[in-house]
Image: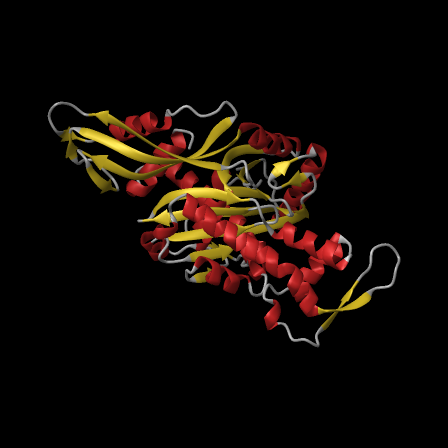
Length: 412
């Protein structure tokens, strides 16, 4: 976590890094007795990574270095460790079941029994290049009684667990670690982006009732479904904000940088809602003069891509058999969720309530500029890093902390 040079407890700085396809964000917070306090953040354009995977190491190193350096300057501190998020289509969720027989007679379930059951469930054979990012128990089953949240101290003869494992491509995550190392950071932990965004945007009652979070990033849309307060499914749809920008660049024959600006400023995903007479100025490629074009033409480019994204999300949830688990609907976050009209397209296609979410963090002094959908991941990351640090330091804080500390020790 790095010491901040004034002789205080060295564990009080928490640094997190969100290496996205569009931008790399570093956030430094201080863990105080009252909770998390903002120290500084930095942002750099992500160079060298596409769809969540690093393709040019040197450029990725530069982006990380710049983001961290800016955060350090703002925070007046130096950091050496970070927790980093990963995303992209190489992330896959696997659900497995495992258990342990406690004996021929019922006895008390111990922490050790829980650990053994989780270990049994996680010992499924994964392909060579997969590594486990998270172990998320969905439910424990005690003597065939399902739906047990915390079996510790309960009586039984056999304990089983349904476990959701979030797995990633080992080489993809290793490249992120290498880039961070070359930028001067030691990586404490790698975590899944959508899980972090869920932390900062979803409400407890939504998780209980059943909800899907769709984090629309630049390169892909990461999805996570909660039911009964537990993770029921994780998955990725390979369409994100960059696809919309590319469509605009091709359709309006304008450079990518201009296409991105035009999309953000004038984009709408329902062409019928754009007034006929509205015109926008479109820069041309090369040194040709810019042209005026109908704003509705831009919407006609974005509309089919929005429909495609929402249909892919719908099909993904149906194929995974989790559409019925989302009565609280779909929560959209991530930079791509800001497009005007997207929530409406989503609501029609998925036939579920839709809400746009910004991070609602318990971070003191955090600037307003970070309370936007594209920072849901990095804010959630800080909350997660803080929680796991606390759980490792005070393992006696209630069951939630105990289970998290236990799984943190298991390398989850």
